[in-house]
Every structure is written in C-alpha cells, then in structure tokens.
Length: 262
Image 1: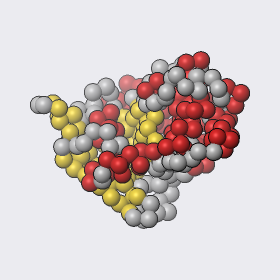
Image 2: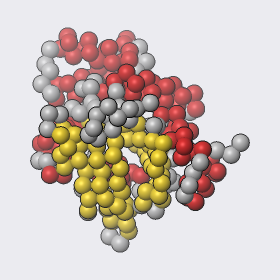
Image 3: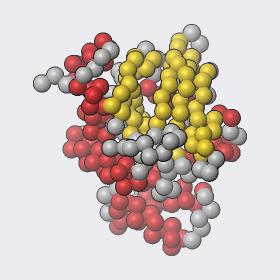
Image 4: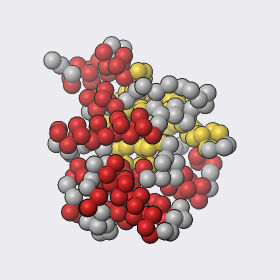
C-alpha cells in the first residue's frame, strides 16, 4: 500500500474540463496522485475516462484547469506551460503510456529488443552491447524469454505484446505510467498474469500508475484509490476497498451491484 512519505503529490489535477463541440466530455475533474500510488479511473463507456487520461498525459489540452507534475529538482509544474520539447522529454523519461491495443504502443515491424532499446536510444544511449543486455534483462522481467529478443511483436501473442509494451515503457525507470484498459481483450488467465506482474512492478519500482478500466476486479486488485466517472464528472473517489465495499453515490452503487453480485 502506498504511503505519502512525500509532502508533495507527484501529479495534481485541478478542475480539468474538456468539451468537443456541444458535448461536455470532462467536467471539473480534480485529484492528487502520490509517488508509488496506483489510481484506477472507472466508469462505463462514454463516462470520460479516456478523455481524462489524455488530458493528464499531455495528449489533449484541456479547455480549463491545470495539470501539474512534480518535475525532478524543480517541483510541481503545469505541464501545459511547458514547451513541446519539455513535454516530449517527460514522455520519454519520467512518464510511460501503455495503450489498450499493444500495436498502438509498439513498432510491430522491428524486434522486441529494438522496441525496448528505442527509448534508451532516444536519451542518447548508443552502446549496442549495453542496449541489448538491458533489453534482454527487461524481457526477462516481464516474463518474456530473452531468446525472443530478435523476434518482432507480430510473432507474439496478445499477452506477450502487452508485456513487451510495458517493458518498453519501464526501461527508462519512469515515475508515472498511464494505462488505458491494459487488460482488455486478454483472456482471464493472461489477465491474471499481467495484473500480478503490474503489482510486482509497482511495488519494486515505487511506480505511480493511473489506470483506466471498466473492470472493477482489475481496480480492486491493483489500485490503492479509485475515482468513479459518470457523464464526464468524477462522482465519487476514495480508497478502493472502502469504495467498492461501501459505495456512497447512487451511480457507484449501481456500478458495484451490477458487477460484484455473488
């Protein structure tokens, strides 16, 4: 379980809103995320989960509000006040983004090793032997046989592709990873292995994660805290077990009862 050893949140989201024409996709969302904490964003399709994820990951500028990240040696900084070059550096170093479809987060036509090594090369690493050794190490850490280092993701199963995408993101030792439905479309046994891996990585790396999921079982297994979204608004937030065992908002009660019935 995450403890707030730091007095400063890693990420601070304050009154973030986003509309597309007349459609309000996100309405005044606010929360803090602490180092090493896993936060699940849950709700049905169209509730605003992915819009929230994209606005806080510098992928879609909000119409209103602020998103601040605790930059190393500097403190909280508004990510939308940064230059594009600063945002790109953040995305390559301290942040990761794991897509629902691994093909969106991998280069499918280059080797597994090159997929993992590419982020390091983007930071100036050039020693081929060290890059290859680091890539092999990370493949092992996400339970992919290092002998597959020269295979392309096209030769991998869906679960292996998702684990490769995680390795590609974590090789630069980020402090925050955004995940968009990372277990969606995987069969139950593959999901279980992936969730177990994510729990281990969170614990060992003190990794903060914002995970969007419609699956409350995933949230219960992984997340310290949850925010529940409905029609673009955060309707309830709190500790995961507390919120799932004793939901207060009528929508959360409906969500929990529809999924967690005995």
